[in-house]
Image (cartoon, rainbow, N blue to C red; front, side, top):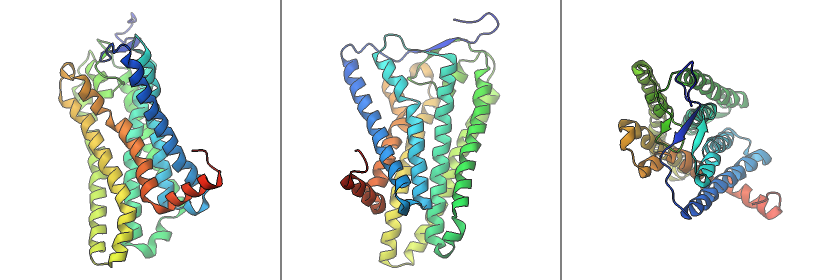
Length: 312
């Protein structure tokens, strides 16, 4: 299991999987149904935005990017999880474990970035409508998306590479996916500095976007109070899906980070599954919230279905 030159295990074992007997097929079917739903719902939104020229606007481009990120994040979890449900051994190689860690963390970072940029888009559209088209040009939208992606791709890449080089004194993970916090705790060396640095990075990555979003919607609320009821209705129609999406994602992240406050050996299976809400609920909620609440997207989807241009 371990090489002679280091204390790095060649594989890790997920220890929370129990022998459910025939029930494993029920859990597999439900998980597969959830995964297929995520793929289908997000692809419908992506195809609707890409194929319909009237949706080639900043808000819908960001929604399309959000759905693509949901596909990216859920793919890091479900295929492996479905295999483990049917398998008697729950092992993952050292490289694949850190690839999963990298994908999950870049997914989280990009989701926060997209939700923050979407709040800025709504802020400019409602509070500075006369300057919207000059500020939110196609070049600006593309630049925001590229910077948001590259920032976390590079930063998370460096962090995961450093953690992957740490000597580890164990290979048992009390999780059903590879998580960076659990891997750090397996290290044989003192990881106080990297633990503090990673926690500071995590807190700032969450709270800076949170404060920006709250500030944006506070300004939007002040503008809406001085406007007509018709204007408030239109503003609420475009802002409500984003508020629901951002709130749901923050709750999901809280469930995950609260797990780090507990001793790994005292965590039960239910709390571990609950901590993975950020990989399951947002990818389902995002397309449903935007597809059902925004009439422009809903109209395009129904139009394509009626015309037979999109397979449901």
